[in-house]
Length: 301
Image (cartoon, rainbow, N blue to C red):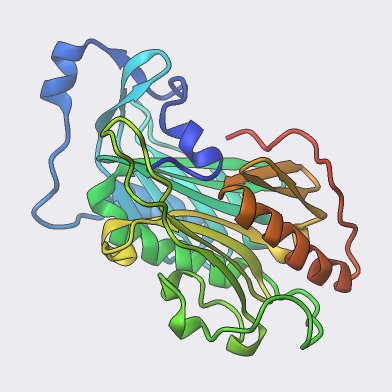
């Protein structure tokens, strides 16, 4: 299924400075298989702890991925969430290095996409964007780190009126609830859309199930395939800090979420996008924020 935000585009983006273009014959030999056990590189853990404090680290072994430039090889990476923020470490031969770091107060959005065996997590901050590419089999560990980062980073917005917006729904009843359970259950508002019926022809893609949740902390958009466990098989996720949102808009099938740095877009279908803009827009206005219909260019990963 397709992604909902910038992480989908980042899956096949051009090679990063630390990545190397390789031929397809060599790519097959460099391909990564799931490890028998998780490892934690000592150098990465030490470097990350020095910068952001001790905490959780997820390792992505070196692997190949498709890109706009052909096939590229990505060296070993490590994403760390410490006491002071989140940072990305890359084994950029001959010297490992920290690519960038985002202090928790500066985190704007978390964007995740999966396509087959490839997955990508994009963390957007006020001054820095971190792109962590990994293989889909590592999603359970990445999901734990994503929840840890969001719970530390996002501050609650102003409490909304009890009568505003869609009916309240306890987080424990939401699909993929551990991924959205960052606010008080009574202040969680939920909108959902069932998946389309399967297309007649195999080449015609059907839209998966989707839901939009507004908590005291975030606006969360999730797309997933019914019958598959989100915490095991993954989801397409976009979570934007509520206190960073300056406006909501709908354009065709897309929900547009404006932030000071630009905007994020989520492909939800025209009906759900329009409903989310209408209902959640009024709740954000109750927070005292400006809600606009047009937004500027999306933050680039």
